[in-house]
Image 1 (tube, protein in one colour):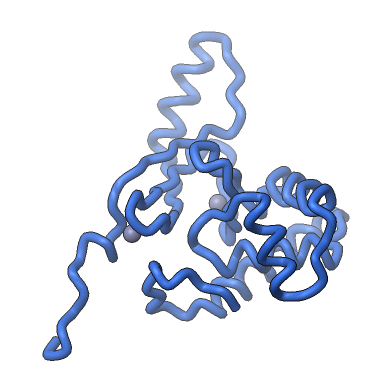
Image 2 (cartoon, rainbow, N blue to C red):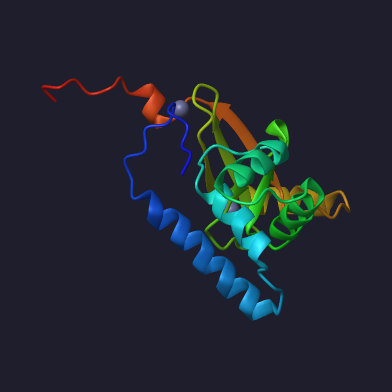
Length: 166
Ligand SMILES: [Zn+2]
Ligand SMILES: [Zn+2]
């Protein structure tokens, strides 16, 4: 497994990956879509990184962990995952992030992007979602799932590393 040394993972990372894959299998089972081996591999590789991966980077990583798939197949797998809500596209980075949670239709997805280590987390806001729905409907506009991207400094980068003495 390739993990960027810039990120200090102190959580059970295998559990993140397992959650994402379990949810993907449940979603695909419910909708009748097929989580093909390549789609699964792409999602698993995305889930292994909390830093969004660009499509090209993803192709490279897939090549490191096994047979290197044709880039077009990877792009199509990404389209499938994004359309199914199993992964998100981070527009400002032109990169992709696996998603392990179910989003409510009216929620706004807020991406918290660390400018220092690249770590990207997501939170959902129902209150902002309601405000945006109200404002856009007043304008007769039909929004897609609204997304906000907020750049800043993540909790880990804000905290200096703990010393040996604690
Ligand atoms: Zn999500
Ligand atoms: Zn950070």
